[in-house]
Length: 217
Image (cartoon, rainbow, N blue to C red; front, side):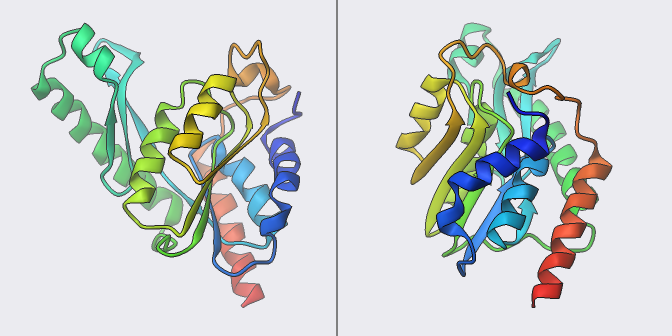
């Protein structure tokens, strides 16, 4: 049980200590809940922090059900079983994608301000979320990041469903799931405080990390 996302980040950071103070390491957090975890890791490793935005593609009328996800860089991952099983037309998938793409771009501007994204090409990228349940958002993020040609890609989470964590070993260079309980149920059950992270908190964490890197430079 983690006290909150910051505590989870500090604990997860100890698993990633071999990457501390190494050139070419960058930590990316999935918003919003993954950013407080990633911020602690970036501080521990003395690495830059950035946000990597992923948006779920919800089924119209049943938005809690994901038919896929999109991520920064234009990558899209579809849950073909859901799309085929509900006979969702391609036009509807495209309409939802356009809507979520606009929101993705709005959030990137909100979180970063006038800062551009941290480059991933040729770097060791640690991709962080607050947990893995189905892993749809993380899969979209991994797909998008592969297109940016990182030298090495690590997926890191404090807690995850065992089968989901294992599945990522096929698409990431390294997977770090600190806790993989056999009775997983949901990510939030492994936190004492799993209150929603706000957009303002994300922006503050990114601003603080950027200032830290400027001081170090």
